[in-house]
Amino acid sequence: MTADHDKPLNPDAVDPDALDPATYHRIVGPALQAAADTAAKRGHKYLFDDLPCMLALVEMVTRLADLYREHYPEAAAEKPVLLDNAATAACVMVFQEAELPPDAIGQMLAALEAAYQQVHDQSVIDGGSRYIAMGWSHLDDDDREDAKHCLAQATEQIAAAIEVWQGDAAH
Image (tube, rainbow, N blue to C red; front, side, top):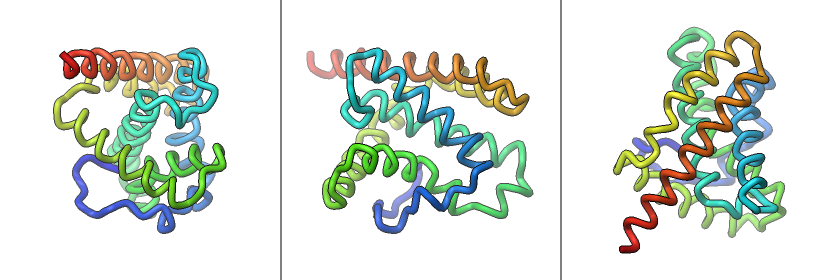
């Protein structure tokens, strides 16, 4: 789920289990944990129920996949489709964990993609990028505790920016 692709999302074409453990461990897992922890702190029992945190998840996984491509171009060349679909796969995992039916997952992915496109186009979520980059640096050094802290900051920054933007749009 990237902001610059034109093909519609097909949840049936994205298999979250296709992510190899190294890619999951570096790109999806830490972002998923940060988004879920932040959603819980914000009073949401389920991550899928917190749109700003879901959008933060998409942004973090997308940026982490981009950083992976940048730092490990040879390894990234071996799994371009997995990296392209990592954010969508992460969202599908969240929706499946909540035991949502497949047709609802497809609808939610489409709505999430539209919302992501909007906040991306309007530069609403750019403030989280420095925290994501720091998180990547810590992940690259296998310092998962500091990475977790940076990604939590990214999630909080992105969620807050979205809520301010939503409040401004409502007025």
